[in-house]
Length: 212
Image (spheres, rainbow, N blue to C red):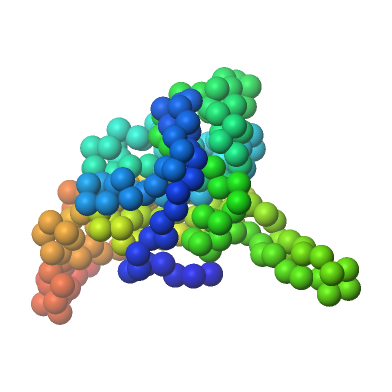
């Protein structure tokens, strides 16, 4: 598994469905450079079980991300037509109607591969002379926090059965933005509004003496 933290986020152009039903060709993260932070998350498949709980949870907290100047973008290996159909299916029928943030179609699986979250890989079977796929041809539950310069500042990758924490994604955004604004580093379980630390031995000692 590649560690992308501290590196430029892999760029891509792909079709996305935005605002719950509009097709956008050549959707790219470049539109956010210099303007917005990005939470980019991968999920395995449309019309599944854990995935809608995550997507709807992101939508429920979308205003919280937007208030932090942070865009939320989802990606799966489904087509834009599958995304559109799911976005237009009622919740009580297993759909995600009401979701407005972009869902990117990664039918070629190249975006998942470039972010190294594809749950398998192509191989060559010498006996048959054919290409085969080992593993599952879907994305793990990868999440990447990307700053306004396009640098990955946080990543977490869950296996397929494990849903993610939206609160943790927001906490990471808050912590990085606090660091950018004040130059202070954020201790374990830090939350917005709590005391952070000066990045020095004295700063750590002072923090620990207050919070032992």
